[in-house]
Amino acid sequence: MSLTEHPLILAIESSCDDTSAAVLKGTQVLSNCIATQKMHARYGGVVPELASRAHQQHIVTVVKAALDTANIAKKDLSAIAFTKGPGLLGSLLVGVSFAKSLAQALHIPLIEVNHMQAHILAHFIDDAHPNPPSFPFLALTVSGGHTQIVQVNAPDAFVLLGQTLDDAIGECFDKSAKVLGFSYPGGPHIDQLAQMGNPNAFELSIPSVAGLNFSYSGLKTQFSQLVRKHNLKNPDFVSENKNDLAASLQHTLVSSLVLKALKALEQTGIRQLALGGGVAANSGLRAALRSVAQEKGFDIFIPELRYCTDNAAMIGISAYFKYLKADFSDLSVNAQARYSVQL
Ligand code: KG4
Ligand code: ZN
Image (tube, rainbow, N blue to C red; front, side, top):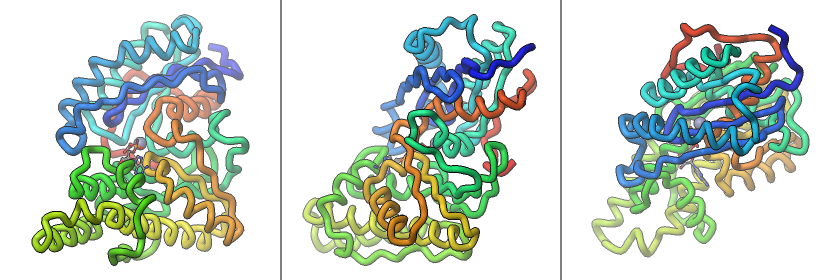
């Protein structure tokens, strides 16, 4: 089989509650289609059983939309890429099975991708940035499922420097927003309210964890206890203090990330920090990192928002790097719910 320099890769992402398919030509995104599952909102979080069923319902339509938008016929594809993990097993299985069948039917290579590596490699998509980071750089990946600091030495060389010991930062945003009465995902609600609030109105403790690790379950509990305590005295406490509560929480969460990012930069001597994951959408975090980068003299990379949240284009760019090395999977490959960024 001859490999081309600008492969046409169809990528599929189904690790959590977004069914996404993208077509890339080399590093250029031709399409990036996403069906987001709305039904989880009423349960306050992603329900795995419902998620996998919805992936099954959406996958054919989403893949077809990606091919149509890119104006590419299946027969012209060079490879099929999919998310192997980490994620919800039932959700991953839908993407893996679909990708395997399609690759087999089209007689083209199959490429497995690690979702956490993909959040990082999203920085190399053509229209993610005017200039991507250069190797080595540090990546701060913050999402509903993960909080990690990774040293990225090459597209296939990742060193996990630190991660959360319990809840992910996105979960802390989401569960705290639920305490304030907001539906899942709550992060964007907190972000919006925080812009109108006083970040110093309520005192919350920045989690204290050794090294470059994180922890958010204590802060999540502290926040809900604070709300409960005040609610007992004043039933209107939340409605009267929503903005200040959100601003104080966000300020504490953002400060915890900034502190660890600075520590990692200092420890490694690296001067480039690349942000990724759904929480990278947070306006307070983006502003804080930009300002501290200017103050301390390091480069900060924040990709276009559509490449921060879960999307198949990031799976496609990761597969592109593997395609160049002919790093293909055989049909025995399977989904892996727990799958480290450092392989
Ligand atoms: O990467 P992502 O789309 O999915 C995974 O978890 O892998 O991240 C979703 C997370 C949710 O926790 C959501 O609340 C959070 O990203 N999020 C935000 C904002 N937008 C999305 N958190 C804070 N501020 C935001 N603006
Ligand atoms: Zn993700």
